[in-house]
Image 1 (cartoon, rainbow, N blue to C red):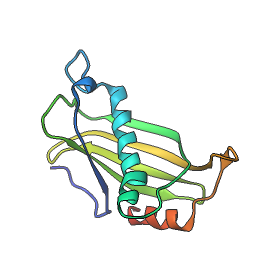
Image 2: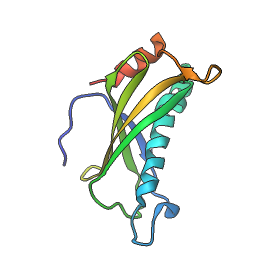
Image 3: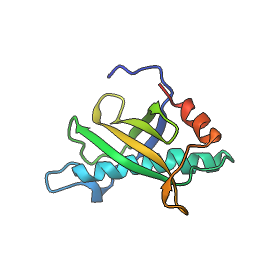
Image 4: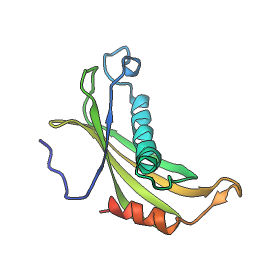
Length: 139
């Protein structure tokens, strides 16, 4: 088992789909970015909506880094995309992820996310409620 910090992590279970598997029999490296996107959508839209809170609006990814630790093959049980916030600034924040199960870490990744005003087509400041939500998962 891999040791973890005590930071509250957002947990998103992700099923490995047959369509995710490449000719080498494991999840294609590009598909892992879909896993991260699904986890972010769960964290910033679905979970907040289900809790009766306002989902985040206008977030854009400005950077991704991904490290492939071991191959992930087709399996009946979902993996977990565990996400936490490493840094919060007025206009952007950094997310860290692990795609894992109880025994293995398959991927570690990082994304820098910027708050964006779609109508003005310009960066915006994170709202107080957004900052408070991010702090729930912050290092």
